[in-house]
Image (cartoon, rainbow, N blue to C red):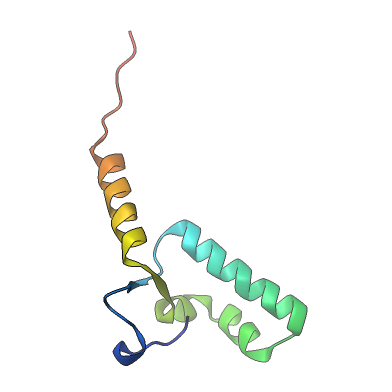
Length: 86
């Protein structure tokens, strides 16, 4: 999603986040590339030509439950220390 306003988002159900995770960045770019390939839509080409600027405008809209699950997974991954093998 390129633009969103608070009036268009139901904060009880969803959360809007910047697109920062590498897998989200790759997915967004891939979707836009595929859209351009299939449709030739000029705006898609403009986004791809200035990808860094476009990326700063993208937001990720997900259910609150999913955001909480991802937060917990991230905490777990960051808290886990490797076990030394003997």
